[in-house]
Image (cartoon, rainbow, N blue to C red; front, side, top):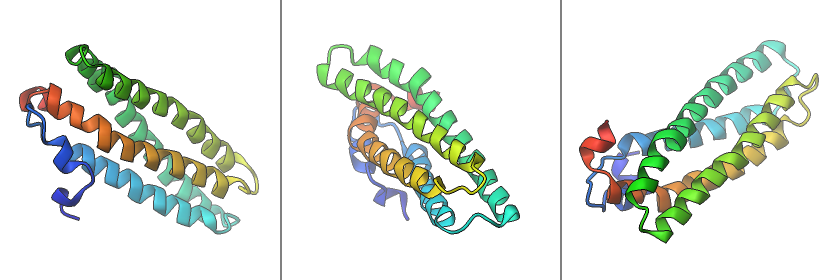
Length: 161
């Protein structure tokens, strides 16, 4: 998929800062891809111990990458936007929503962890489905309403930094 076809690309680049959000959009595409793979692999039986261990290793990598992504947003990006856009009630509302959605995702990650720990993994499919639903909705919301704030508030140099 060309980056120009990724959701949010045009809207994210329409701000005065001209920030190139290709890497952010690529990360979102990778999260979506990996969620589909996780859902597909957890739909089957996990009675095969080596297969279960491989799926769990992939899950740990996914979870670590998502944590890094959300931590960067919560500690660097959103605070910078809050300060720069403190005059905009709309921007503050969007940033509040982004933070609230991150908090909704954390328990779903824990539910997948708990399902992996089950001897039979019987709730793994349901836990994965719930995470997929919430996280994909969040990514879409962020691309539609959150990322354009970066283009409005940050210069290309600030974004790169």
